[in-house]
Image 1 (cartoon, one colour):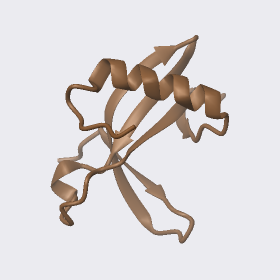
Image 2 (cartoon, helix red, strand yellow; image 1 turned 90 degrees about the vertical axis):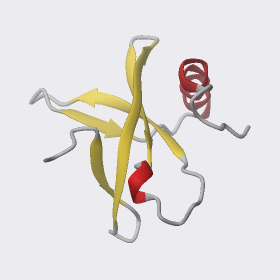
Image 3 (cartoon, one colour; image 1 turned 45 degrees about the horizontal axis):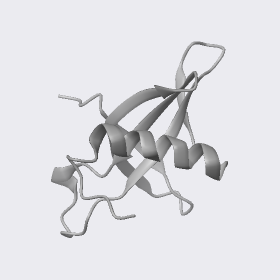
Image 4 (cartoon, one colour; image 1 turned 135 degrees about the vertical axis):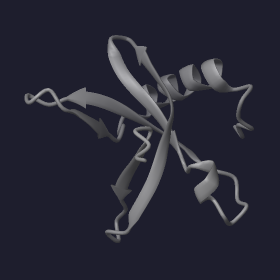
Length: 93
């Protein structure tokens, strides 16, 4: 059975990285998603990192995940994620 909350991305070495959508929210009229390594996939015992990405709709109607280059926008989105989910995650500032 496929889990729709787990997506595959490719890093700079073209290696597959699976990330799970742990939260999604809207801020200032834009959609965002918080993604992390799925709990059952993290065998190293290391803490999972959270990635915040903006969700944009293509002309075909398909949603795409876009990295956020603007530091202020990323900070605002991360603060929203912390407000929404900070109690569920050990967030290091």
